[in-house]
Image (cartoon, rainbow, N blue to C red; front, side, top):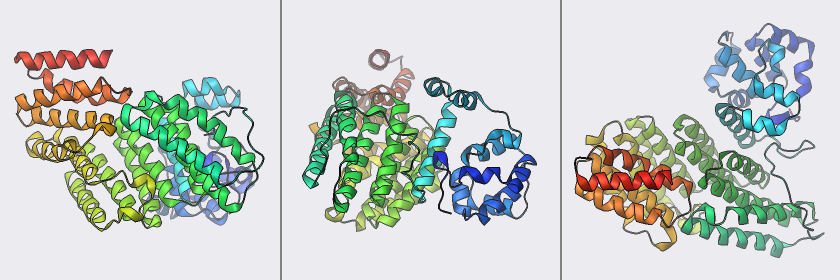
Length: 456
């Protein structure tokens, strides 16, 4: 089917108004609904991606399995953009506000779980090949400025965008998103206007790639300063541009970064779904290093879910893909993933597992993070803070209080130099572990210092 519905749904809106479809919806006969969708050319894979179900679940429903649970029916309706009233489902506050066209209030009222589900649906639709540019304005498009743009552009104009993105990303790496986020957004508001300029097909493709990368940076820096909704909006737009440029590795990059956002907010299930979508694009890209990055992050998510066997499996895959990768042939975005980062990610996965089994995993987390922390330079201060705080936390969990104190103080000193809301969040486990040793005056002092830093 060529017509794509709103919100990234693979179904054109008029399909829901067909008599047979309306009858099936009114009876909540999901099996019949799915069969009608198949007649319209919607694949099981697209249905699964939109509804958050596995393909095996969709297959079972097509064979006649009934869907009775209200929350599942609501998720199917929302994922496929079915008007809830067609299924006799209550409109939530979000839908009522949309009917009233109160977009500003919608942003404030919408439940975070709904937003996560919508982004996953959008990501799945784009990754699986849905058309992403059409007459309808994208839900992910931030407002544009009105600075005049040239009527025709060439590669030099695109290269200027790429150079600006690189310079601003260097600032983000060194000092955190707070130092450059506004500059990124300002650059982006002008750069997007180049879409209205004429250019060759080759230049336009590179423009899509450059805008995808800049939107991705805008999303990352927004996340770094604690602005989740703007981050999600920029990542959504980045995904669309990357797909339009037919750059699978860049699609994987965007999905990896948005997955990291959800890991930070302790939503490993949501993160894992995005990493797995990213893995599809990574495999299509043919870049072993890109695959390695996605595998490493899947390992971290499985660690947070306390699935050590899956962690071990994904760590093994990460090592294998990393070993066969040629960094010189890898896309620019993934070249940051060096051997230091490999150790850091393995350490992060074991850190997550050490929450559940410190005796078995804390010492491994320490050993891996030491390997990466010793190699970080001044250009990676924020990452160094994260690594040191993780190392210190696991020294405490492994019973080495004195080393935990020593490394924890270093983490705090570096953290004071970085403008990143994430630093305070990443120091929380260290604060918790230090609090367990308050009979030790030095541990008590570290606890108080970290607590004050996080509350500042």
